[in-house]
Amino acid sequence: MSWDRLVRLRRLRELQAVGTVALFFLGPVLAVVTYLVMGPLDKGAASNVLRIVLLTDLVYVLIVAALVLTRVMQMVAARRRHSAGSRLHMRLTGVFTIMALIPTVTVAVFATLSVNMGLEAWFSDRVGRVVSNSVAAAQAYEEEHRRDLITDARALASIINATKRATVFMNDGDIRKVLSDGQRGIQRGLREAFVVDGTGEIRARGENSYLFDFERPSPAQVARARADGIIVIQDWVNNEFRALMPLVTFPDRYLYVSRNVDGEILNLLDETQETATFYRQRESERGRVLFEFGLVYLGFAVILILAAIWLGMWFAERLSRPVGRLASAAQRVGDGDLDVQVQEEEGDDEIAMMGRYFNQMTRQLKGQRNDLLTRSEQIERRRRLFDSVLGSVSSGVVGLDVEGRVSFVNRAAERLLNWQEDQQSVALSVAVPEFAELFERLRAHGGLVQEEIRVTRNGEQENLLVRMSERISEAGTPEGYVVAFDDVTDLVSAQRMAAWGDVARRIAHEIKNPLTPIKLSAERTRRKFSKLLAEEDAADLAQMTDVIVRQTDDLRRIVDEFSKFARMPEPERRQ
Picture (cartoon, helix red, strand yellow):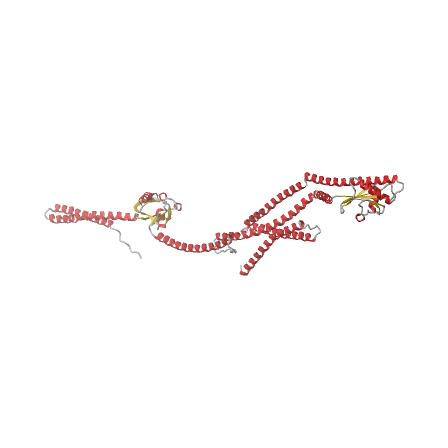
């Protein structure tokens, strides 16, 4: 791989790392922004800001989901190819995914329970009764003021109507006097009292009834009062209730009175009603709130889970990639390739140090293997020389380990002992029982032992001169034993023949020594006494001496042949 390509790969990985970290931190940022837009900032559904944020969330989810799906497909393909580190990558990704899911699911369960319990507490029967009672109390207060105002208005109207019936003619001035007297006679008191016509124009005023405080009734209110008999008008701005009712004894005349109400109580009544309305509205929207909360939390959870999974996959890849390279390189080292080197990661953590240590290990292993091969070649050359030397000698050599098992046999030993392949790695006492006694003596006393042993192989008896000794290492500990032996059968036979020859020579010498005197004595006796005897006796004497001489010559010939048998054969020179 060229240097430029390595640089490009490194830059690509750096960009991938930066993008991964950016995507991971962008997820929580989008979640927080979405929460702010939908919660505290309270942007409506038609808000462009909310639409942009939701669209950004959707694009983010799609991008991260596509990246995660692509990485998962790549991991599955690598797993099917049995790529180095693929199983570890899958396991780490699974672990990070589970680590992302467990807290999210746990928080989701507890959040759902908490929200549900909170809503149950908010919308419980007790709270509902309190709200209903508050509204009922507010309505009762308002109804009490309405009822009192209506009662006072009817009482004042009845006074005016009774006065009109008692007096045949009453003008607006008379009505004012009656209105003021009646207003003073009302126990609870009225703030203002007016008599108006059908257009809302003032015809008469009571005590403390000023024009600048007058709120002219509308034609609709006048028409409704004429139709209903009496109406109550709420004026929260001026903190008062007003009542409008027609005067039955006067044509086109209406009594228009007002009563002060505590402003704080009115505001409290309004707030109570608004709160009750809001409470009932939220209670009716309880299911929708739970659904929206679940939907928002699900969106947040999807964003965070995808971001966590993507970060976990990236981190798992950073962990498994060097490990996978190390596993592949270790497999090549196991196959004998010590030239392999892994790419060293940047940094000083354990992963980077592991790559550097692996490269250092392979270099050391390569050097040690080269040294080992060199030494093995030297040992092999020495072994071949040793085998050649041992194979060329006529003596049999057998190597034994410290337990007395056969570890080496040269060709001469195989020939002399008729050695079989199945006798390797067996005890010497089993392979050659005749050597057992001498070997036990060696193990008992150590040093060197020697003895002539007779063995029988293939029906033939052989005489072997056996020597056994210990093999001592440089440290002085026993390494095994060496058994060397020679076939001395011919030597023993030659020694026996030499002994017999010596005996024969001695016997021949002892026999030959008296033969010459006997022969000479016989010849001398014949020559000496032949002249003294008669012819017949001389002939007999000659005959007997001839027999003695002849037998003596025969004995000499026999002795010569015996001596010749006792002598070693003359060596023959071959070309």
